[in-house]
Amino acid sequence: AQKITQTQPGMFVQEKEAVTLDCTYDTSDQSYGLFWYKQPSSGEMIFLIYQGSYDEQNATEGRYSLNFQKARKSANLVISASQLGDSAMYFCAMREGGSGGSYIPTFGRGTSLIVHP
Amino acid sequence: GAVVSQHPSWVICKSGTSVKIECRSLDFQATTMFWYRQFPKQSLMLMATSNEGSKATYEQGVEKDKFLINHASLTLSTLTVTSAHPEDSSFYICSARTSPGLAGGFGHTQYFGPGTRLTVL
Image (cartoon, rainbow over all chains, first blue to last red; front, side, top):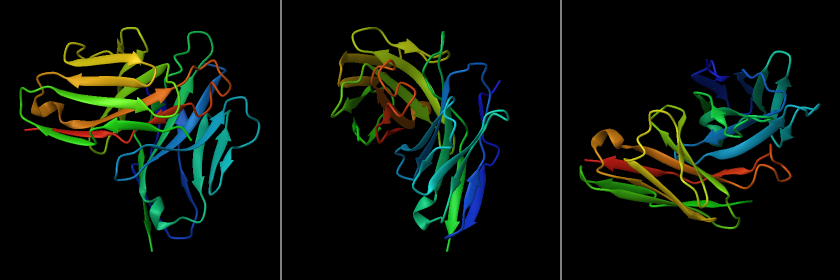
């Protein structure tokens, strides 16, 4: 079974608008971490934001925020005030922990975001 | 922030030759390094996990004799694609991590290299 599901293969957004990229996850662990990475056409994986399973508040990093809904097992990325430079692939990832946890992140299939003027 | 470098950034080689890719953590000691493979428009696929001084752990379906991984020091891991063939053409990305038990063990302790694009003719 897929541990990380990103249902949007591609998204379009107009510059300066906000966009939400969906991510749902599947785990039976109580301790886990959720990540979002950006991969521009150059290929480098750029860390954006992290949410721990025990964090009560949604993580925020500048224009990025993570809408963490634990009961629904979703960790959507919200990008506010989109910029042309935000056009890239976005990957959601989860790292499970606790006893028997691998600490190795599992990646979703990614969402291609295109920001147009 | 922590920096991971990869060399070369791209390589073109003939079928049957071997190619070595280096992954270095520049300003921290990486107890664990990961090697990923990514096909165009697809997600990262974990190939293997290597811990310094021990043999790499390969994921199911990854040929350990074809993809040789050496993690000889806390700052360097190498991936050698032996007898490369066109189907090995891909984007190879390494990442490095400090001990998960340290502060931030669930935090952002995994740092990615810029990737190496391998084309086998």
